[in-house]
Length: 141
Image (cartoon, rainbow, N blue to C red):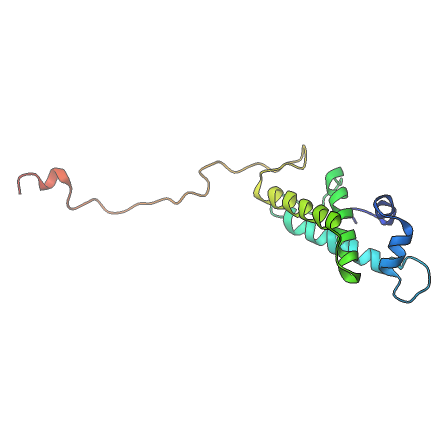
């Protein structure tokens, strides 16, 4: 299940721009195999981050994940053709920063958040033998 579809991309950029980014053959049409690849690569990247805390693929898809899937997919299309413009690169970087925060547990995707581990869950447990020398035992030496 994809987090976004071609129509979502068309809401963010024009059909003409999508043709320019995908039509290597000069047919004058959007090559959907290339948009599908950009979307699946974006979704794999999202799953890579969110999979640390959530069961992926996410279902239902949170609205923010759909938005970031669109941003990353458009960035992927731009990268294969001409490099990303500043605005598109900013959208991409914002998406990655958000996903990194999801992976760290700093940002929630909604009501189905996994249980967070207790604060001391990752602290080491240290034990050892009784001390041979201590201040009390060394008094008077």
